[in-house]
Amino acid sequence: MGSESLSREEAPFSGEVWRKIDDTVVGAASSQLAGRRILEIEGPYGLGIKAVPGIDRPVGESVSVGEIKAELVSSPMIPLASIQSGFAIPVRDIASFEQTGIEFDLTGAASAAMAAARQEDTLIFLGSRALGVEGMTSLKAAGSYKLGSWDEVGRSIDDIIAAVGVLDKAGFPGPYAMALAPSRYNLLFRRFMQGNLSEFDLLKEVVSGGIVKVSILKDGGVVVASGKQFASIALGQDLVARFVGPEDGSYEFLLIESVAQRVKIPEAICILRT
Image (cartoon, rainbow, N blue to C red):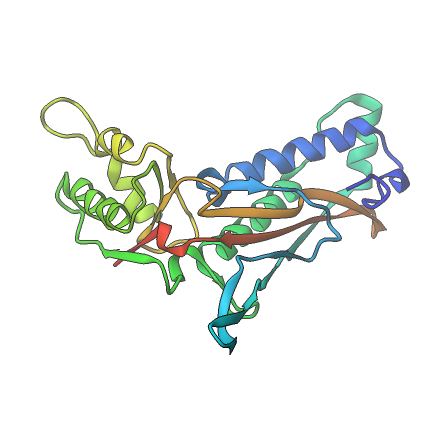
């Protein structure tokens, strides 16, 4: 997105202020985003792109002439949802920074970035009923495995090996990546009595594509075969700050991004149910 689309040329302050804002937004969002750490990114294609194509699939209608059949095939469009989150910085704080170099408070920018990141992960993992989009933990065509209790050290390894077996049996030999709810992820750092290894250390051998914690999940998670040929995240516009203007002694900003989850082969995902 060009600076003219962000109205940055209208902002009455220096590029150094924008650098501080951009660094804060990127850092805060990166600390939260989990979907991007297990799925590859496609794009960004531009803010004006509102949808990306899905996979061509037969719709179940055909016409035959003799032995020749014409089949109706369609590629459903996946909407790129726009995510927006606003924040403000007092005019005096920015003026003070430009005059003295004293750092100004960017808590609002960080909080807005974290909110946008959590909204993105909610879309990726849980989907959106309003948009009619399934998340990775709600895909009807995905494989699944029911987790047991992880109260006993080592039980997580048995469960994840079994979940990987579901994908292996479906024809996806790996490598794999995994996303877990905090209640499950945090247990992986318990250590065995012998060897001084944690469950996380051992699971890295099974799930070599990465193991991430997803703050928006209450329990369970997913194991996914790595590679954008199976699933990816499409970006129209990556998260960026737009200048809105002065308001009540502050400068107003709007964080914007547009994103979609593209699951091309749902069978390459195993949902960890509880």
